[in-house]
Length: 144
Picture (cartoon, rainbow, N blue to C red):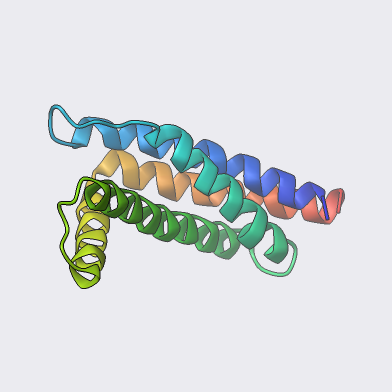
């Protein structure tokens, strides 16, 4: 069911996801093909904001809510990008076995996770967590 807290949480995390994707791009090796990285990251933020933060709004503190939402967005974003790379390699027949494919997905997710350790990205995630938690709880208390 649509509620104001879900809409606010989804919007906040979609914006954060898109910003983080844009801040990660300069950290990646030259010649990297970003594809739809920003849109995918914003989509992950949208879904996580709706499903995770939106449901918890009003029941926990703003900081906790924002940190849980951003952590879930980062986790699922890394998982999704690892799986996308795994399928890309599998379609090119570069992977021989399913175990090798899963290892590659985890490796790519961890490599992308290292790019998130840049100070600009960390600051964006931290500030975004606080702001999205405050906005989402505000929406839940006043409009929900």
